[in-house]
View 1 (spheres, rainbow, N blue to C red):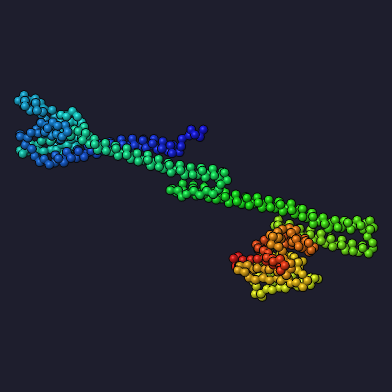
View 2: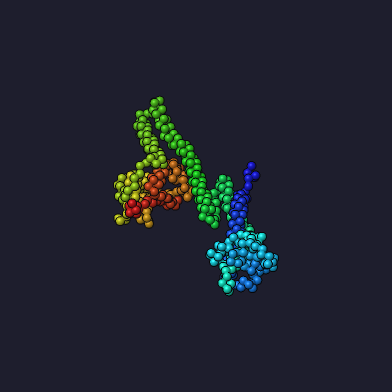
Length: 481
């Protein structure tokens, strides 16, 4: 049913036309009435001023006594009245001998009393409405006389009809201009509304790249900016939702992979332990082999304990349940603690290279110790006999850059992106049986991220691998607190 509804422009113009037509009628009526009153008042003042230019009249010879000055209805007419306010028309004047009583003007006494008077209405000797002016005068011999001048109202209006017509035409032109402006205003408003409707349709379809232009009025510009801001917010929200959806999908894949890998990692030692125990139970093992089997069981138990412990650590880190409290920590002191506890029966050596004036890092001391411990353990596993593991740190801008480098076999470039995943092991390490649980580097990345740090790796196959960790500098953080 929306196609039967009027457009906004049509509704605005229709309402404007009704309001403008009513206003136009009232304005025209008021202007015409006012112009007519002003015009008559001006002519009345002109009549009075004209009478003031006549000083005296001779009643005996004056052609105005009892006679109109002329009979043209479009011109000013005059008449003289005697001291009693009486007049005689032409017929009466020619028959004075018959002593016909002359009529008397009722307003004559007021004019004689005030000296002069002007008004609008009717005069006894004129049939049409007039404006008139009367002035008391006297003849040379001192007799009072009364001169009356008048102008027919219809004659005045006939002379000014062109002015009235011009006023009406001007009002109609103003009305046309008003309608044109209303149409233009309605068009500008409907244009903005159409743009908003199209933008809303685009946003409903999933396209949030909406940029409405600047509008000519404050209100429309406010609506335009609000729609644009809404589109930007929806775009960011949509991007965040897509990113969160991708993250959840990745976490789901990692969870499935984790379950599969954990099952595989736990199955191998459990299977070995079961086989050993069943052989022992069946009496297959000789007394000399029992000690060896017992040592094997202890190693597998230790391996299972280490694996479960690291899995729990990684789970707490990734879920945010790992308590990490950042405070100024001396990276050099933690590195020397690792050095003092380091032992490698294969003969690899550990070296610490750090400047004495290295500023502290903003980190958790226990988390930093575990990071270095896992990195050194990972490096020791791949470092050959008489190889070297080096722990170094330098101030790099606003961060402390910590590096653990080894002189081992290194890792191929295509395997580098996966070394931070759970149970990730290099192919060569797996082939040589040197791989650990595959959780050490995942724990390193989780702890570093929890402390607002960054991790990375560099490796050249056959020459070694370097893992770097960037942590915030404590001085800058504390100064901002």
